[in-house]
Image (tube, rainbow, N blue to C red; front, top):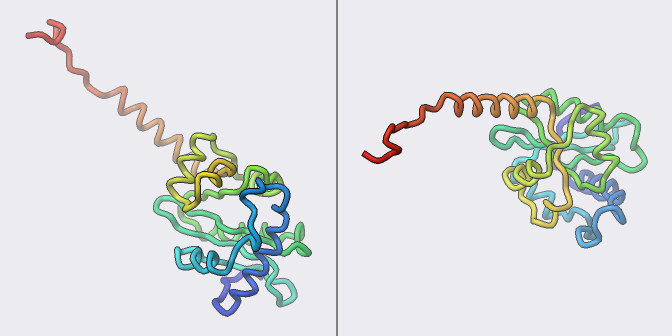
Length: 190
């Protein structure tokens, strides 16, 4: 069952995040790993910043969490974690599907570049990597992370984002092609 997480489940949510994040140990750069991976204060800060967490239950027990944060003209998938013992059983896919249905804007997700399993998961669900330059711009615009994490992360976007970006580029190109140029037969000297 997919449902919103409740404040009284804070400790459970934190436990799921830190259990699942053990997969990053030895994979992400050593200078980016901390123990615990997400301290309680950081999770509180994320919730206060507008990340709304949803959970997947199995047998009445919370086994996975995933957040969504609306950020201007996009929505961000944030902090997607499935308890280690429950991986590859559909909880992450079910959560992502539920959050996609809530999003009325293009979706972006950031993850560690070294987390190949996470990248494959999002690609399986129709997300595609953005260019490195676009990744840097998006991480600076929509996420509150440091330069080192920007260097070592990737951003994936849904097809709606790519469609919107392509449409924006076409409109910009059309606008440029219709810009009147001032012309002076005397080479600008009168």
